[in-house]
Image (cartoon, rainbow, N blue to C red; front, side, top):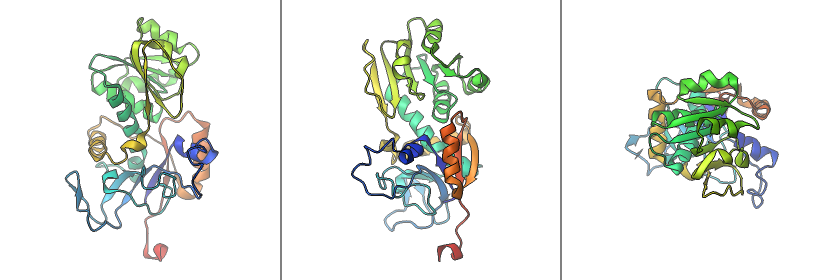
Length: 295
């Protein structure tokens, strides 16, 4: 391991928000889903994955999703063991922190858009658009010919327009009405990274769609379909993972590292994430392994 992204889901694991999910598991729980580092060992039956050869010392990025669904082998570790399908080579020209900052967020955005299945020219609303998942959603959607309306603070307007957003509306209680001022019949779909739920549903057209994250048992009515998104179900989708790396290399996606801290300062990293208003990921860094450190 050389770097591990710190995601909101890691904070939820620590603060008890996921207690119901982990009710039958024994601690310890180790957070961390985004990882980057070098291959130290390869199982004997693994030669390549999706046509990509794997070799010792190869620099890779990966997502920790199914090795242990109860979190004992999370990314805040000096070593992690992953299915070969969960890794790809690091994007060319990136640092380890940059490599560890994008994969889970980009895969989450990709999953949400795949679930919606929109067509070029459709109108997509993205809440929390300046965040990591929201920003990648905007970039994907704009590159695929969608009309993107972003909900964010005024200060983030220039950034989101550079990502391809056609319009940026201010967040807050009036967000849905601001959207309807731009799209009077409602948008075709929402990627609701800010978890506005029933507060943003009025901005969706009849028979539209909402992609949601974490937990929401609401029913918006009017024929609107709600798509729960759980990125862990695609942790071994190597075709998608490799495609994300290629899009990162080509500039469709951009690196978004908000801060880097040594792994020993994980508690401080969590405090920064909890404070919110980040425009990228906090990343923990690890020193290269040495014979002395491994014994």
